[in-house]
Image 1: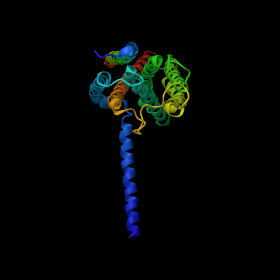
Image 2: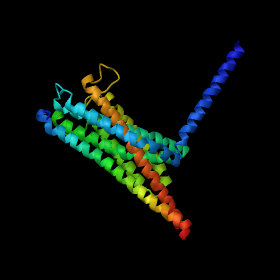
Image 3: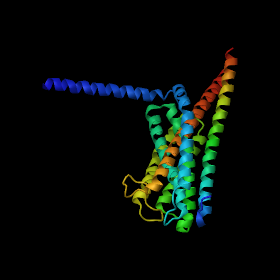
Image 4: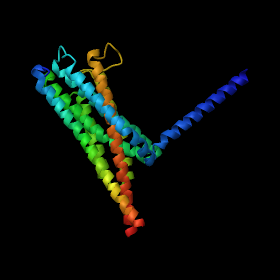
Length: 52
Length: 268
């Protein structure tokens, strides 16, 4: 493991917070994408049934 | 001779204008949601993979294979996150600025949705830049926060991002929300530009001058610069992927809203 000396806590904290923020952003985007696909599928299904 | 030269000149101007027209037509094709979805569908996965590879390589290179700074010690490793995040925080506002202008001038719906999506990514990048800056500031300056003009301009940028997204949520009517947020974006661009250049022209305060410069003497040493460059390119691809993903979701949700409105109208 790399020796970060007396600033190890600060460096790890910065990377941890950034990682969480970026992973959170990716997670939210992914969930939104899945949700929107599902909602659109349901809405188009309803539209198809209505026209039939 | 003069007449043939003039004819040549007129012909080249005509060709240039034709080329420009064709180019603009192909750019505006993207404004069609269906075409936008089709084109972005093909590039999403390669972009995501490329950004992940670049970020992993750049961060491992910067974290494990670069030396500590002679003054800042190991805290210099925060540079590989802080600088790209700060750059993206400002660049996302620039993307919003361009998209908002296109919305206001040409009324292309995709551009309004791109602006909204870029704000979502930009707010996260601003938070990362502020948080890593504060953590870096504590051991170097002895404080997490100081009302330094450069730090304050970034905080104002964050507040603009929050205000921008809050305005999108507060106004129910889509076109009014897009208009209002576009105007807010244009006003906020002053602060985005201020945040961008504050590290160059504001010399008072704790924050150091810009670390990256086109001037080789001003730029950080190559040993830090190369991994930072890889991370910066990785961040650019990551933000692009996220903006496209968010925009695609927004387009789908707009379509759902349109179907629901049609259902409501039919049920009346």
